[in-house]
Length: 83
Length: 94
Image (cartoon, rainbow over all chains, first blue to last red; front, side, top):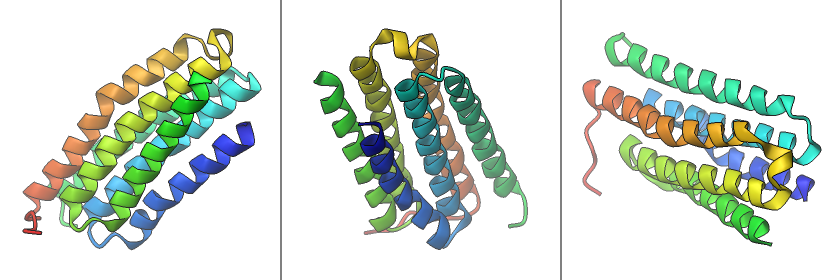
């Protein structure tokens, strides 16, 4: 069950990775990065819940906070900066 | 049983959101697909983990994670869309 869930999450994480790779503008790439951050945090939470290592839930929460902050910061930077 | 169904629905939502982000044209349509798929898939996935594994394996931090995703997903989507609009990206017709 754990392997199946993690493999399915990996497959769903391939699509934002493709948008991050091929995105023509900065905003497409940023949306791909934000979506990829969400999937990585979900994978960390699933690993923590399946194996019982509760410390990984804290890691997932910290990863989600840092991913959100980096997304907003890069969006604000690209909003006023010169590409 | 409920947990497995919720996990399957959540993974399908995440995959559909990702496929929409690959196939749609323009940043705004991609952001719409990604935002909807991510919020629904994330909440259903974490609730499915709670139902599948029980309350002892997950704990309160998972509730905190659900609340965090619910509150910050629209914020990051709005930040990206506002940046794209301010920098002159116009929505396409079709």
